[in-house]
Image 1 (cartoon, one colour):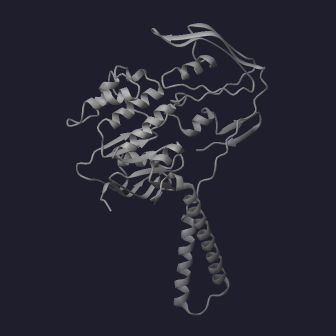
Image 2 (cartoon, helix red, strand yellow):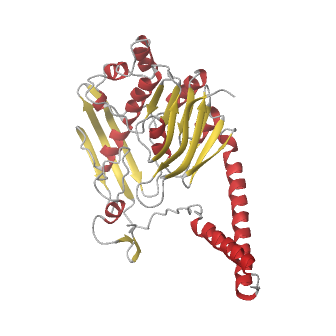
Length: 387
């Protein structure tokens, strides 16, 4: 077996309360393609940052083969004070790297290199960040949600590009097809620990179900054994003190195992509450136009959306999809034309950069608006918020 390019051993990290990572082990060898799987909040992104050397764990060791190069793609790229996308990508190159790769990859990804990074759409920003990590051709690529905000053609290009490279990959993604096509082994981060198989994502769900079923059987056996031992304690204690002391100690051990067991997290069921009946008309746009400088993003666009309609807006990155949504929902005014919203509308929006969330607020404050400790659902029902 080839020696690992990067090795994480007995990694531990806690942000107060239950450990986020508790003895995590991860080895990545030359050319290996690992998909890192886990529930939201399980610590996948944190573990990737530890692997990249950006976060110091509370315990454990990180080893990287001398001379091995690593590039890390975060979910949210930081463009710093770079004036152009080309300058941003070139800043990620080492002295011995091919400088032409920067412009080449930007062009492959549909960028010229002259764009201001701070004025990019979500998809364009992701393209620039990908060019930055791919240009040096590193030995290890740590990619956190690489397909976020990308259009379909760019996802297909990225899949082919990664497949053609010799770099070792560690991938976090919610794109099941992307993981299925690229991964060759699966690391499942669950309740602070990693379980790993030498099979790709296509085999993950069946394997996970087997693991959880076996775990449930083991816990049932443990419960039955505790019941039997407690029955002995109440009714079957004999006069042989030494044997009794040992058996009682075993019972305490069994109880500790049961007490310290971390079960799997439950499933979340999300449902939209019924709003008051709105009018038949939801949105009517007539001849709306929006331009940035000489570039027209929306040109003389008209539509009529009625209650019950389901409308999908598709297009390449930077085409103006988000701008059009903002125009239609009243978040932005058109340069010309009109937008009319129907009566009794209750509008909910989710922006791709989550700008509606205050990073200084806690989860409870974000859910309740900082008012009390309850979330109102509909007109009368409520539930306690997290603390």
